[in-house]
Length: 65
Image 1 (tube, rainbow, N blue to C red):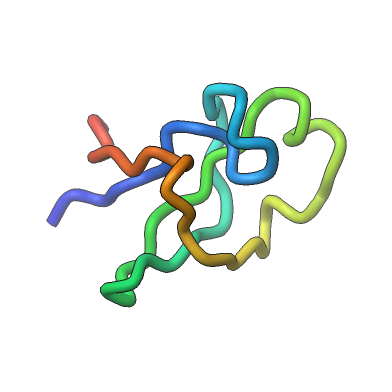
Image 2 (cartoon, helix red, strand yellow):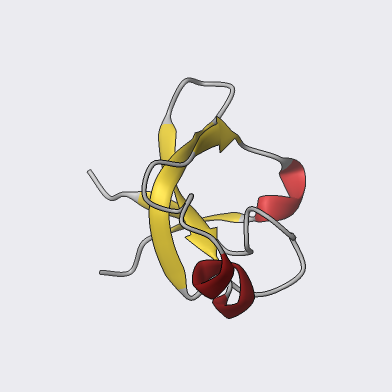
């Protein structure tokens, strides 16, 4: 099963995610990797244990790895 991740930063929803840590939960109770932009990765330490709810602006995509 392929994992999925957010395309945009889960904090600001404006910048493309470059690093993934923690997860967000979809309505289907599926866990998706939470993406972070360069600004919010360097400013906060919440990326390691982040848990939140998915929002439409996050852009869920399949992981290419």
